[in-house]
Structures are given as C-alpha cells and as structure tokens.
Image (cartoon, rainbow, N blue to C red):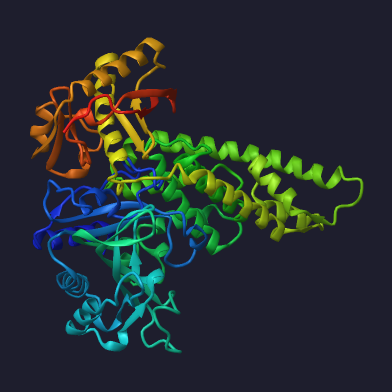
Amino acid sequence: MDNIILRRKYLDYFHNKNHVIIPGASLIPEHDPSVLFTTAGMHPLVPFLMGEPHPAGKRLADCQKCLRTDDIVEVGDDIHLTFFEMLGNWSLGDYWKKESIQMSLEFLIEKLGMESNRLYVSCFEGDKDAPKDLEAYETWLSLGIPQNHILFLPKKDNWWGPVGNRGPCGPDTEIFYDMQPGGQPEQNIKTDPNRFWEVWNNVFMQYEKLPDGSYLPIKQQNVDTGLGLERVLAILEGVPSIYETELFLPIVEKIQSLSKNPNQFAVRVIADHIRAAVFILGEGIVPANNDQPYIARRLIRRAVRYGRELGIDDIFLSKLAEIAVSTLSDVYPELQINRAHILSALENEEIRFQKTIQKGEKEFSKLIHDSSSPVKTLSGSAIFRLYDTYGFPPELTEEMAAKAGIASDMDGYRMNFAKHQEKSREGGANRFKGGLADHSEEATRLHTATHLLHAALREVLGMQVEQKGSNITVERLRFDFSYFRSLNKEEVAKVEQIVNEQINKDLPVFSTEMSLEKAKLSGAIGLFEERYGDTVRVYSIGDFSKEICGGPHVTHTGALGRFRIIKEESVGTGTRRIRAILEANQVQGG
C-alpha cells in the first residue's frame, strides 16, 4: 500500500462515520507563541477543543504535517522522526471513549488488515490528578483484546497535553503493534519499544490544566486521536523500519550512492533531516539563529555533519531535496510551488556551514598550537566556546582532537552546554506564554486588536497588504505583513490613530458561519482560511473589519483600551513586523 492510498483509506473511513474532512493546517502555528511548530494534529484545533464552535461541526478528520525536535537524538532508529504526518479524528463534545476505541480497532483490523493478536494497548493507571481509566480498559476487553495485552501506565506514558503551559488534556489509550510476534524472551510494550511500535493514540480530553498546575474538568469533553502515517505504512509494507518504506527509500538510496563510508545511522539521520528541512523551508522560512529559522539551520547543519561521516565532500543536500519534493508534492503542492526557494536556501546554508567549519578548524588549530605548553586535554569550556562562538560542532572538535592525540573533556562541554540551555530557557520563559489555549482577557483583547491593525494597514498602505503571521502573548501582539519597504513615522502614527478611532467607537464584534466562497465574495480576508474547510466562521468588527478566523474575540472594541505600536521592523525581503500593546481602557463598555 502506498502513502496516498493509506491517507485516502483513513479519510474515507471517517467520512463514512459522519466526520467532516478538513484540510491540514500550516506547519507554523497561528497566533501561538507556546511552540515553534505544529506538533500534533490537534494543535491547530485547540480553540475548538476549548469550546469555540467549529464551522464544520463536531466530528472532524484530517491529515496533518507535524514537526517535533524533542526526539532528535532518537532519530536514526527504526521509528523516530522529526517531521512526520499524523492522521487524526476528533469528537468535539460528541462521541466518547467507547465509540472512539471501536472505530480505531475496526479501521486497523477490517480496513487495513492488521492481525488482532498482534495488537497491544495501554491505559492510564491514575494518580492524584485523575482516576484510573477503567472505562477504556473495559472497552478494550469487550472488543476482544485479551487482558494480558492491556497494560496500565503512569501519566508520563499515558496522558496527553497540554500544548504549552495550559489547555485541554487528559488520559489516553495507546495502540501498539507487535513487530516480532512469538519473539523470545517475551517482553512488553513498556520495556521493548523496538518490538512494540506505538501506532495510534486516543486522547480523552476531560480536563483543562491551569498555569498553576491544577486540573479542572473541562466544559466540553473531546476525543483527539493521532495515527502515525509513516509507522503504519512500514507495517503494511512489511518492512522493519520507516526508512525502508516507499516514502523514504528513494532518498536513502540517493544518500547511499553519494557515500564513501557505510553508516546506516548517518544515512537515516540525513534522510529524516532533509525532509524536515524541506517542509520548514517550504513555509517560506530562511535559516537563521532564532525560532523556526534556527531549527531549519540546526537540521541542515546536522545533516551536513553526518554527510562528512559518510565521506560526502560536495554540496549535496539540494539533490536530496529534489527527491523529497517529488515524492510529496502530490499531497503537499506548496513544496513544488516553493521549490526554487527550498533548493537555494539549502545550498546557501550548506555553503555557509562549510565556511563555518573552515573557520572552526583554524580556531581549533590556534587552541592546540598557540599554547605555551603541549595540550593534552581540550577543556570543556574551550569546546563549548568553539560551538557557541563559531558554530563548530563539538563532535568535529572531538574527532579532530583525537586525530591530534589530544583528549576532549566532553563532560565539561556538556556541563557548559547545560548552563547555556538553562539560561536560554529562563530567557524564553516569558516569551512562550499564552498560546492557542489562552483564552485570558488579555490574549483575547490582543487577538481582536490584530484584526483592527490588519484593516488599518490596508487602509494606509493599500489593499495589497496581506497578513503573513502573528504571535500573541498576554503582554503584546506581533503582526507580520507583506510590504516592500519600512513604514515612515507618519504612516505608523496614522495606523495607530485609525485603530484607536475604531476602539473609541466601541464597535460591536460578531461572527457568522458561511461557505468559504460566500465569505470571500463578502470581502472577508484571512491568511489561514484553508484550515477550516468549506464552511468558515467570519468575524466582523462593525463595518471596519471582516476576517475568517477561529477566535477568541471581545464582544465590542471599547473593551480593548488604547492601542500603541512599539516597534516596526523588517523580518525578511518583502515582510514587515509590527509589535504593539494595549494600555488602560479608554471606553468602558458592557
């Protein structure tokens, strides 16, 4: 079975179960500073999981592109990836545990032909925050899963969410597939993850986690499931790893053809990283040193480093990217549309990193040759300085030191790196507040203010202005938009004035549901309109602004307060950024 047929089977099955099929969202989250990328299929749906009505209804399904870097050190084994696709189905206050589990089991066995005796499941064992999930356990038993194939696990294994520091969450039940039936000695899903692959997770959102760490029953109980496309594809194709599926094999074979030194782990890391980088760059990202651009840079440079281990000396990543684009552009046409940008960004970054390596090699030479006495051990601080100052990979430092007969204090390096990470976490703690799950008064006001800002920019600069992204915390808003030059002081003042005029008018904010076509004909605008499918929610602010959006919003503009722009800057060719805040209320409304 190829990947396109698998996606179609899944979506057709849930369509027949009265789910509306919605398009997957962007890999870059909308209005969410809590994470850099869309990490799961539920991530773009958080407002609706929190109670906002979804225009498409209460049963949804889609295929979502996702990216996670927390497992990056695991990449290279049989099952872990940074970029992956998640097939998902949701109940927004509709069906609950029994029906969700029944559908999952039916799809795996009847539609995909998996052997039921190779399926194992886990359930939440309970703790001080929530009770043992006997409802899921008893459902599995009633459907024929034997008791010795069900395991109760703690929160770290069988609890999902929230995304960020608050939001919907709850116990989950996970489905595993035995890749070595009858294997000896007998192991279990907890102690032998290489044998038992987790393929599907059914999350039962019963709670909302608050910033103080407490859990409250959620107003609307939801089901959120995620089925890993790449892992299921490997099972159906009968291959022992995801890197041997038809999605990866063309890339793997190309890497092997370029390699001088056989190294399966290095080949797999490069194959994973090039796909992930292609999708990030396909969002218009340019590698740099912060946020999403930094992740792109990290993946690209890590791929280059492993390419050196394989003996690949030439510029090679763009050759692999061509294959990645061709294998996935039928499903994700944006890859072909942005192909030129993807290839040039990869090549430029690879050339830049080669220069970094050359500079690092010179600095390394100074370290060992300019010392007054022979260097026997390279200190951890020296290794970290090469990394932090010059971007020189510590693995290369260790390799070069070994060739020179010098030991490397890698434990010391790791201590320095850990201190650096802690400082970065402390510095980022305030930045990553809020998120899509933040329906606080402050975040709601700022979200509404972005609509006024967008309309004001179009009024001052022209209707060619389009939103390129936004980021909202409880303290401020950040709004990216298309424009070819910086704004002068008069233009900034005019935009600010117009927004405040609309606030002072205390305009009503109201929403209506309509077809996407009707919304466009009515003059509604929206960067993320593709997320919602054929039916969308349109928010109007008086007669001044009309946008396709998922919320949340205030009910009248007088609740916003005084709008003030604090900075206007460039974030790349043709894209500008405004940072703004809301100050004390000017109008008190009801």
